[in-house]
Image (cartoon, rainbow, N blue to C red; front, side, top):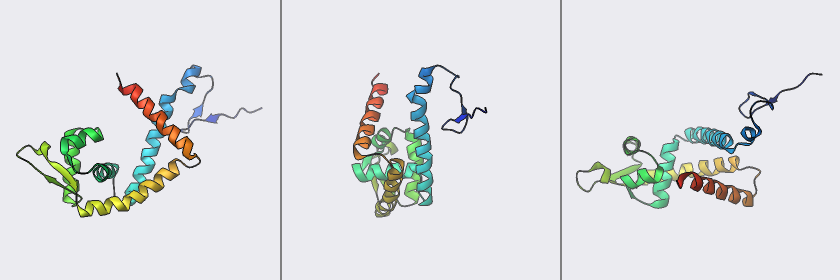
Length: 161
């Protein structure tokens, strides 16, 4: 009798004997893999529309939250100021956002969408919605709500010190 090896989610042979039971049931590797693969999928979908994940998150934030001071936008997106500045410079050159400064401090600039930014947001919003539908295919509305709540709770657990 030939024993067929099961495949792990990443295509490597899974061994039931390797590691303790808790390791096979650990949620952290599953969260990491789901996040990584979901983001890779979403970035590929956005790329077909000429957008990046960074562009999408900034456009969506500014659309939903309105104009923001650059420091607040960096905090909201949980990214470093210099990283945000690089992205904003690119988006400004493309005419998607405008920064208005009050004084000499570049970090005190208020960032807002331009009409071109509003248009790009509208174009890629459909891509984002379609991508989310694919990622959540087969889950009921109740399961999606429960998943969101569970992820929020996990996030609170690991960030509340």
